[in-house]
Image (tube, rainbow, N blue to C red; front, side, top):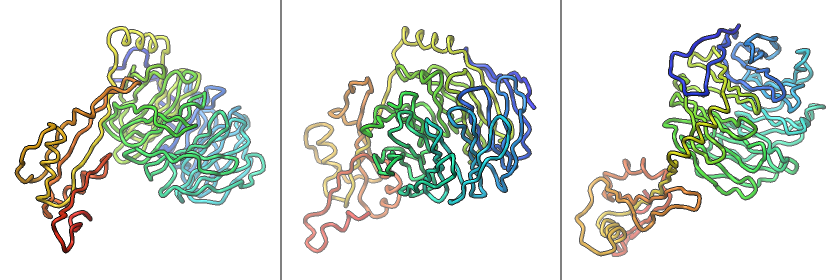
Length: 427
């Protein structure tokens, strides 16, 4: 059942709430669009998958057969086959046109994410047993099991060029693998949170990953970080490319959906969508049609949003004409070690380029490091912050909370202590 509801929140030009879909008897866990039509699939804790006509809001059919919650859904590239993964540790394939069940894949834990390759021949499934499995979609044969993640796998995506498979995990890393050989190509490091979503752009030249509060853009061939998109103030839950790769959408637990231009990576629109506390809500973007699906905070209602690409891209041009966006990144350098060994004096010397005697630090102090500030070729303003952590034992437990996101550490020890000069380094 669909309801036409006017959003009470003020929406930006070019964004309209089209439908609110209701009908599941349990909370909704996943949504995905058929890339060849306006069909939307949703999986729920009621162990069913529902197919909706996203443009009219009508329910097409309900697929039943799982014995546990439906955690993930994926269409093949032609929209003929739908895969659904469940807490019952199975993946089921369905004929989309008839709704008939086709086959079941068994072999690992709860299936949290699914993706077909560009030909629809291979299906990847990610699980809470920290593995990714590759299946022959026609025969149901297990092709290989890919191991290496240290936490559950949240997201999988095939490179449109067929060269790699990306997986995102709770271990804070996306990984790129060769789907033919299973060889690890790259482990991408730098996220400050579990990687909930990985998505390739339609060309396969950019991999977007969401972990913590930043979207990171990578070159899949080299594994090099190209850019970080900042703006969300809480955990990012999901990503999706729109309009043949001209736009990128991100959904965060800051209760916002943000739309980014893939031309200059500026944010061109944002609209509110509340998230339930402690629950990761899905986002689905149609690759060509101007449609986005999100889950409302009650986890039972699905919102269908309609975008006006001309207005949004016109707004992008207007913003570019009036002011250039500023992209910013910060590196954190910490001075740690024993107390009374000259950390503060060293910090003062690095910042001010002259020596001056310093009193012993209590707690922590920090400075902007001007010598390392610069603007990169991509226009990003870079700065470095130098943190001086007091070395007294009483402070060490507290300081350990601030070290995990450091980019560089300078460790000083007491070389005059003949018995154990490194005793202050371990902490």
